[in-house]
Length: 165
Image (cartoon, rainbow, N blue to C red; front, top):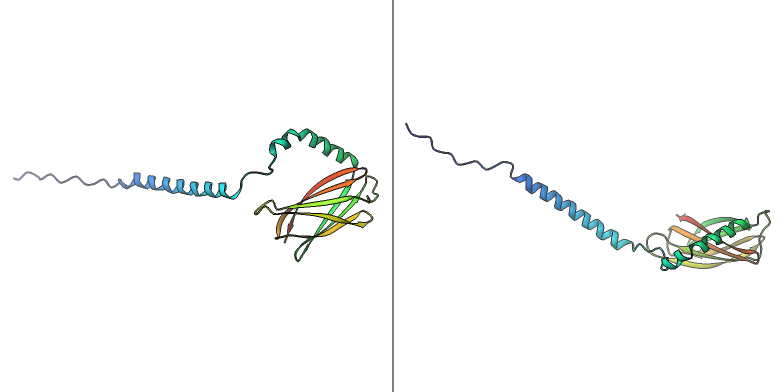
């Protein structure tokens, strides 16, 4: 009788599992690195260039907003899309509903997303508390309108966000 020959050991069938885990982790790390790159490259995180100074003056800003609210001005904003931008119409009245005339009205249009476009325009007095103007804009989409109103009785600021189709 011949002794049984020892058969060579069979390779382990599960040796691929650690490599699969390593591969999956590399895919996840690569995706995270790509997302971090695009996040850091697409937005600087800055909303203003003078954040520290504006933070120091925050109590003054709150007092100014409270004073503006106490005036009781009513401002109606209407934006109509045009071929090359927008037509802006403001109607301003006091607490009693009387039209405020002789205002200096200036607007700043800021693109909150995408490119940092900024358009500044003064509005014309159209009489009886109505102010307006045609605003040329470089693109359609979302815009923030900041309106500054100045009058002998006081001043006011409003902001509206609009989407131009």
